[in-house]
Amino acid sequence: SQQGEEDPQALSIQEGENATMNCSYKTSINNLQWYRQNSGRGLVHLILIRSNEREKHSGRLRVTLDTSKKSSSLLITASRAADTASYFCATDAEAGGTSYGKLTFGQGTILTVHP
Amino acid sequence: DTEVTQTPKHLVMGMTNKKSLKCEQHMGHRAMYWYKQKAKKPPELMFVYSYEKLSINESVPSRFSPECPNSSLLNLHLHALQPEDSALYLCASSQYALAGPNEQFFGPGTRLTVL
Image 1 (cartoon, each protein chain N blue to C red):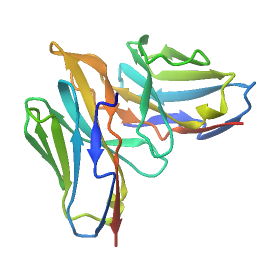
Image 2: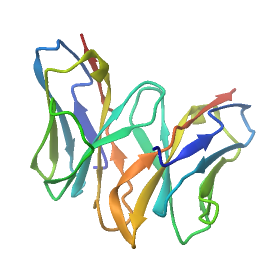
Image 3: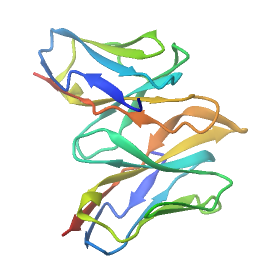
Image 4: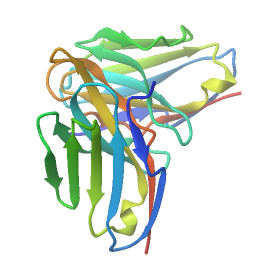
């Protein structure tokens, strides 16, 4: 079954507002990553958080990870119309400290930022 | 050069055709991936190559045949496809597959239509 589940499925906000997306997963992970995809194009890596980290920042992005709840959130602050895209979490599952060597993507959140 | 290129951008083929998708990266990455993505769905992993050897095949039908001629190139040979194989095919690369965090760099994809 899909490793990552995301909510909300769709989010519509005004420019300048903050956007929060959540991701839940089921098994032990090595790390969790967030990607952005503009309509019909390739994915762009945004941020990676390791299993021993709790929070990470990159520009207007803030990611949290709670391994006890098997969940992560992505916060985009001061959103812009250019942030309109689909956002996916992806988990790098592991067993016994060894990565399986593949990412499993969540269902994604479609973010629309209105000017 | 931090780009993954894919050709062609669009491909229309009949069910009896043989065609190939190509992917290239010049970042010195040793892992390369093929994903299939249907509309409004997350990418689904098909194959992983690590150091030019096939390391993961996610039970993909044999009508899809991957090939890694060298560390920079990845091909996906298509034969006797079905209309349900129509999708966006994404190639990605990462520094390593099994060791270390595997942040992936994606190409823009090939939009495949099978008639």
